[in-house]
Length: 168
Image (cartoon, rainbow, N blue to C red; front, side, top):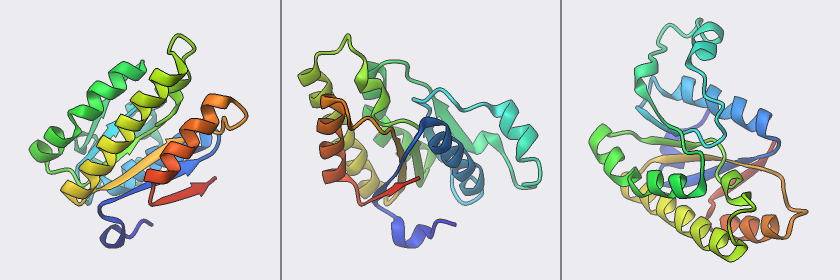
């Protein structure tokens, strides 16, 4: 399991297909909620409390109230939620932030590519700053879309801000 003492203040990414990454991040939220409150930004739209309750019932210390979920559906909404991450961490004293799909919302074709990349860089910068300020562990999911031009640009931006990126 994740060694929190050595990962505090860092941004760690799992990169792979959406289903695998989402399942791993939900599992980590369930396991880590006993150590700290978890701020879970469900941009992949995969967090299902009933599924968690039914499938993780062996965890006697499972308390879904310790996992606070926000669910953005657009890149603008993700940006707004991330801008409140610092305040939410201060208020809840959470030490674990999870973003289920960091880059997915920025592939929306209604967004200009340059605007999407600018917004994405601001989101990554804000997350990194909050991790350091609150000595928190940030876990993010990334999709595999390097074949798209926008995907390559986003991947380069996020890799410069990540402390660890693990392909899954």
